[in-house]
Image 1 (tube, rainbow, N blue to C red):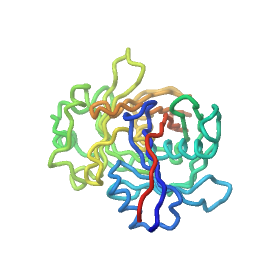
Image 2 (cartoon, helix red, strand yellow):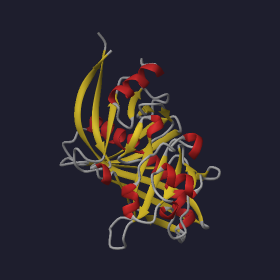
Image 3 (cartoon, rainbow, N blue to C red):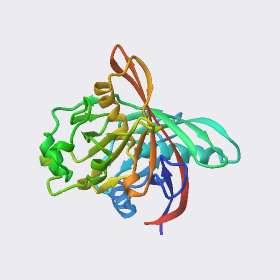
Image 4 (cartoon, rainbow, N blue to C red):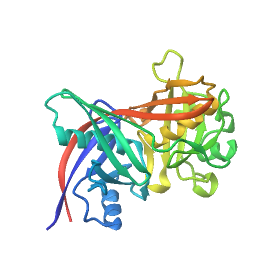
Length: 300
């Protein structure tokens, strides 16, 4: 009987049983696409990562990322979690250490800076491999509201309006006026790709000025097996384009931390930093903590 090792981590959190769970399967070179998809479906987490030998030996690893329903070219919490896992596996956790992990993902090369924490959750951050770009027109306020079990009056705040952006994965971005509306949101029968144009919808609201964070968000993607995601780094990378367009930011770097997973009881914190130059988005950085939860073996 063949077995493969795996570990699980909680990502975008500094404590276990919060954040976004991630399964990492390593020594996965012999698995074909169907086997990886079946294993991801078995874990039934928002994403499962398969670690393979890199094409270029100077890189740390090649990774494949699967939801329970399909493969993704890039995802944020798998990138952060895998970088932390590989750094701790390579160097241990006996002492604090800074290191670089280089991942070959389907979208391209992703370099991650990792701070190993000997006493708790380690931290990883990466520059988004692709800048956010707008992808066609968004669904109407009425269509989004119906899909999210809200009213059209709930949609939009300040200059924010519904948009479609992608930094590797396309999301419909639905701004809502209040945290109460955000809490009420849930997919309805109208939540389909035929109606919305995408399978992933990111709903967000501004946090009060006294909050240390900028936004709170939720992400729904039931058609690809993710009823709700506790933390979505690829959406945060695309959300950088939304912020650059609507927030009226000056040139330079801006820190816009995002809370997610609160309504699920899995609170997460995604670090989002964006740089504008000449009024345009110039760079995006995503960061967060991750902590190991379990290890085991898969029987094949």
